[in-house]
Every structure is written in structure tokens, then in C-alpha cells.
Length: 214
Image 1 (cartoon, rainbow, N blue to C red):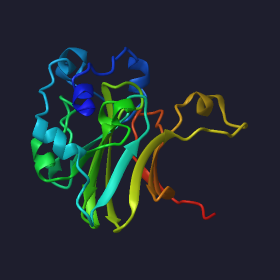
Image 2 (image 1 turned 135 degrees about the horizontal axis):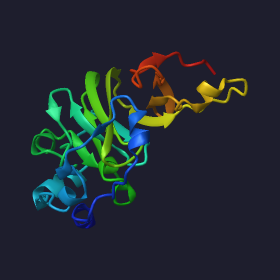
Image 3 (image 1 turned 90 degrees about the vertical axis):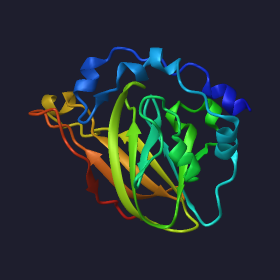
């Protein structure tokens, strides 16, 4: 029941960082109803839904977790199933009934969206994730198609790729560091996607990078 109590608490407080958000491609400000005023009016999860979210996932499925960002992350869609509602930041009935979403073990100490992970059948799956690298009310969207293998644990982790080149120009030094997302399989980096900042447009797209062999 402690999970249920935690779901009723107020969400994270957003604050003004418009200049930072302007430097992020794909960064979107969520509707007013998804901010603090709307978060306080979230529909409650029923006891049956909470029980389903706390139950162990069926055997034979693949688990996918997410992490990174000031405001955490949340799974928007798994294939054609909407997982976490963009406004309420809670699992949809469709996702719960399809048994594709579960509470994280550390959900009480996690950001709002990162309280959940998804489970899926092995094979090719399309996943869409909302990361919140700046504030909890400004989403950065990421999509992935991957051939997930059975008996593996996966994680999508967002981070900034720091520029360590001491000879970089002043313009390069002032440019925001690229946002990157790693796909980890059993804690090993399997794929990496980064989006460099384009000074001309302020936009960019995630491009897969080659992972150096170790």
C-alpha cells in the first residue's frame, strides 16, 4: 500500500528555465494540466491496479528500465500500447491490463515517471520514452526499435556527453553538450544514440554512434 500512498503525493515542482529548454531539440512544454496544479488532481489508481503493478511480471518476458535526467523518464508507448499517460504521469488501464508495466523496486525514491518499468515479449519491439533532462515539465522524446533477447535485462539511460577537448573553439565551448541515450543489456552498453546541438537551428536528431570495443 505504500506505493499507493506515494502515488497521491504532489509531483515534482517545475521551475523556469526557458533558455535551457530552447537549446534542446524536441524539448516540449507539457500542457498546464500536467504541471503542479494538474498533478494534484491525478486520478487515483484502484486497489486492483496497484496490486497488478506490484505483482511479479509473467515469466519469459524481457524487462526494460529507464533512468537519467533531472525529472527522470517515463515510457510513453510500447508498440501500439500507451504506457504512461502524458498528463497524469500514471500507467494507463490499457498498459496495466496488457501486463506490460510494473512498479520499480525503488519506486518511492524515484522521480514520478521513473517509478515504472515495462515488460515485453522477446523480439523486435518499438519503444518510445519521454526523458526530462532539464525540468520535470519539459519532455525530450526518444524512440527505439530493437531486437530484445530473452533472459536479459535492459535499460535506457540519458546523459550529456561532456566535451573534454581543451583545444575547442569558444563557440564549441559555449555550445550545449550533446544529449545521449545508452541502451544497456545486463549493464553493458549495447547501443548509443547522441544528438549534437546545431547552432544554426537549435535542433538536431538522435544518431546512433559506434561503440568502441573494449
